[in-house]
Image: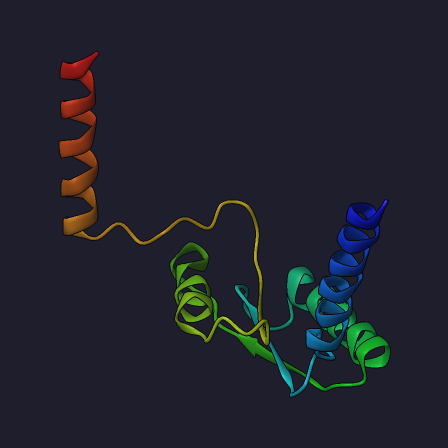
Length: 118
């Protein structure tokens, strides 16, 4: 009986710390990286979503159009942003990581070695 009470107390204490540690989001303006040129349907949709999120969350959303390279320019900017949740990428599922020489070379080496081991 005492052990159950002890476990319940520990769980309650742990959960109370989680509630205290949870911060309000967002704490500063959010950047919405749009992987399409201004004026297109994806840009208009992103702006509508951004305005609605501004109303719901109470923080401004900065629309940042970064078209080009099949969405890779916006994807690289999102990857380089701090991982604090204040940068959101609006793109599509065809955005791929940039294929640099070193990336292509490491992929081909890994695929050759995995074929040998199979």
